[in-house]
Image (cartoon, rainbow, N blue to C red):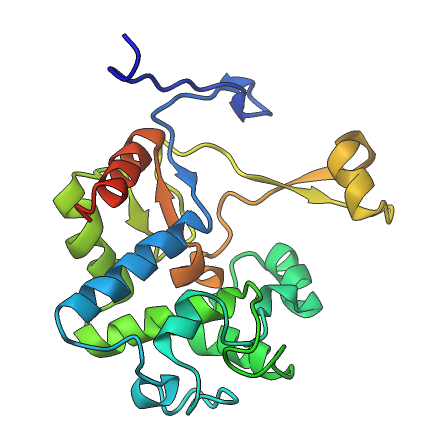
Length: 240
């Protein structure tokens, strides 16, 4: 009947080399869905009176040396209006992520990559997506709570919602039930658009165990389709 029941479908292969089919219970990296969880924890802390959306970045992280830190608010970090450079766009970071996937990035190292570039605009003057915002929010969560970010995710989100197969990773090794991850290696100089549409022109690399700290509060969570259903229902009904 419409509006009742649920189904989860898996398609494709979880391991191309061994021709293994994808399963709905496989763990995968969920990327920037992580940001919705980081934002939820920030809003929980606001509700608990532990911080304010109007608090300036410099109040909580005075040593990060981010330009305009005395002006940037937590709200501007949340909604990508801070103007802070997106460290993911740095060429050296992108190439290093694949040539040295086990490199253990610290949050400050990611912030320092962003600091090499001028802000896109003054705080609040415009909008531009930046992963650096959520690296900073992760540090603010740790500063306010005094606990590691992965533990906070477990205590405030995964455990209360029964998300048994979800975690904010602390090591590059994925769980045993994880699907294999891949990235495109482009030795022939094929343009990005062509590489997406004609993958046969490029080689395939294994990105399963890329160090998770390269994403951290911006995109480090691994989960399953079932766990994400629990999460989306909780967010939609304000139970998170």
